[in-house]
Structures are given as structure tokens and as C-alpha cells.
Length: 276
Image (cartoon, rainbow, N blue to C red):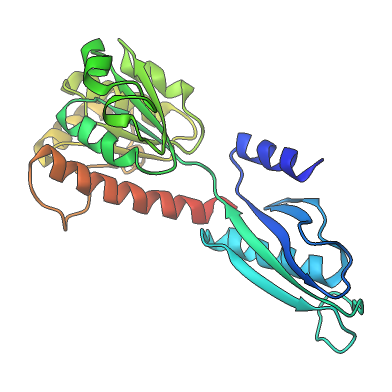
């Protein structure tokens, strides 16, 4: 499989990878500059020359995958019989510098409820590379006059994220369309809707995290109702409420959105370190 086809296939199945490129070649080397290889947690596609240089690059790429590294690195190796190697001698006589670029899984965040807080939160999250699903049972919340057309106009005109707008009269029905590992944030206008989304999120395989906006008293009522619906204590530990980081206080929609967005970015980094 061509390295580019392999990379596209890995992204489609939401697997992280590292692209290894022969960036600089001095003297003789097994491959010319520009040669590429893709390293995934369980596969290698393409080649940068075989032998010690390739095995060393694969080993370092896998270390980057385990650590969840997002920063590219340069790796320089001398192809000499006097060089210390772990995977055999290559005495081509040259020196190569390889660029190792991590390609992380594009995270998915689904916001249920695009009211005042939801819209402010979406504005922040849209500035990051992710799939952003905005779901509301009220069509007015997603009308072009309010949110514009993502990538073209309105509040998401310059979005970095891929923004998906979904009007769902039964919001919890949208959960089955989300990819594995999705982060779910529940902040609808109706506590009945909130309860239904949380309950279904707990029953949907592969959900990455579940966050619920609200007070301690709201969660106490929800715990009782969720238990009546068959959710166990272990199930309920998967729900985080309140959501956000405590260092950002304030009840203004923008302040709440900053707090929640900060915690979501932390969760995304934690998830990246686990996807190996």
C-alpha cells in the first residue's frame, strides 16, 4: 500500500500514526531524500531504506505514539561501520536526517444543546482541529441567521474544526452516529432532554467521556432517576458534573465555555496518549 493511501486508511479508521520522511541525505544512503514511511501502532507502510536506519525510526515512532507526542522530531543517523547501532551495520558512508511527524486521531466532540453556553463553547472549540458535532432539538438554534454556514459565514466562518450541525427532535438519537471515542457534552435547555442524552450515552458503546452541565442538586436528582432506569453506580462514575476546570469561575456563558473548553482539551490530550 502506498504511504499516502495507508495514511488515509489509518485516519479513516481513527488510528494514530507517525510519518517518517528522509528530510536530508548527505553522501550515500539507501534511499533518496523525500522517501516516506508511515508507522502505526501495529503496522509499517513504505520504506526509508531498511536496516538500522529504518528500524531505529520505527522504534522512535512507536515511542512517540505511546507518549501521545504531538510535536515533530528530527532524527539524524550516520551510515558507517563505526557507528553504534542496534539493528545491524549500514556502511553506505552517508548521513541521513529524518523528520518524524505525529498524525494524531482527529478527536470528536459532540455538544448537545446550542443555547447561550453551547454556542460560546462551540465558538472556542471550532478553533481547534477536531470534528465538532452541534446537536439541538430546536431548529431555531441552528438556523443560518444564528450560526451562519460553517466555513463560509457567521460565527464558524473561519472554523478550523469540521463543524456538523444536526437538528434532532430526539437528541439522543444522534449518539449512534458518533465515532468511537467521542466526547459528549450535555447542556440542553431541558432537563428531561439532558437526562435522556446522558442515559443513552451510558448505553452507547465507545463513548469517550460524558460531561453534564449543572449543579450538585441537579446531579442528585439525575442519579436517582438514572438508577431507576437501570444505571449502576459504576455507570454513573462515567459522568462528570459539573464540567470545566475550577480555576475558571463565573456564571457568564463565555466564562463557563472557557472553563469547559479547557477541560475538554485536557481530555483530548489524555485520550491521545491512550490511542496506541
